[in-house]
Image (cartoon, rainbow, N blue to C red; front, side):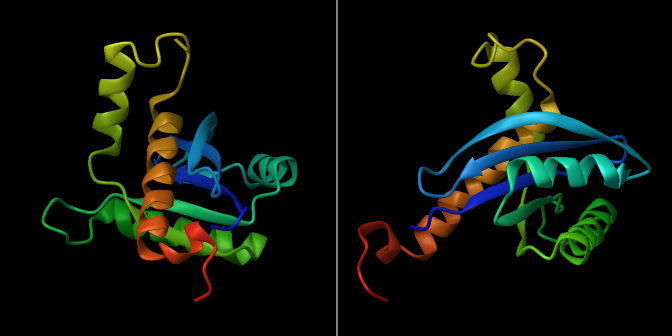
Length: 150
């Protein structure tokens, strides 16, 4: 596995959840969400986050329909991912995020995250999206975990 630092986003029209994680450990932590107007973030605030955390890659959750087809929101999220790539010139990936918001709500409601009462569901969703992406990368490239040559 590499030691990339990755920033993830849970795209929304009013708020965009944000998380940061380390590929080596496969773990992520939520950051404060970004305010958005009709899906458009304050690009200056987003640039500050990129400058502060210095991610090596970006991941955007894709809200795909349960039958696997694209939704209006997944089309908008993909447009957001393309804009991120165009502005910040970082590798940008998408991750199926079906049910991540529900899982985030369930975790928050169950008390798993009770110690962080003000935790944003959007950023918790971004954390789950990123951890899922790390798992998928790990499964796709198991040889990198052990340090074997490709």
